[in-house]
Length: 253
Image (cartoon, rainbow, N blue to C red; front, top):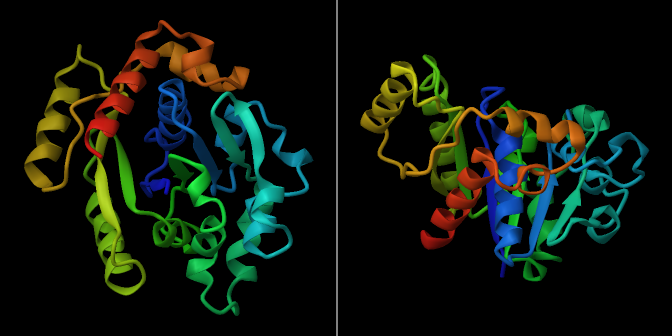
């Protein structure tokens, strides 16, 4: 049975999509079979694999609203070892359309039950907000991985996210846990990055990954070529960082 991990943080620009794409690619490189679910209306994870999201008839939007089956929504082998359920801007209206739907928080979980045994990991890239889409992801998940950017306001919103995770655990998904916190955009040349790391570690009781994802030009370039960093520049510092993170994640299972 595959482990389901939501990558979530309501702050934008912290590296959720970058982590979803490249951690998944590093896991696939290690022989793991991965399904990625893009549940962000921006659809950046879909674009990051070179998928023309606006040309797809079956996306996460159609799946959540019951217009397609999960197997119809899955794009097979966007890169070797990785399948993808894409997203596009249509998803932005899903919250309104789901208002009157019974058990709307558990729609994704119900659908994933059909394919969970086909994968080692299912990664869900969440939108930068705590809405019904993010709650759907958390209800379906075993754990939540929280990327945090090494910046002055890193802790801002983290307590709210942890509170939301705790509420979901109490009311909707008793098994939900925090996989850990991973630092992104780390710059070893600055005192600020190290101060942020020490500050977060002193304020949280959750697991903090030793692997830190550095600021890396090649990481920033890869999405525009529709490739994960492990393919775009396999020897880059960014690629090695995500390989190390993948190994650390596997060792913590």
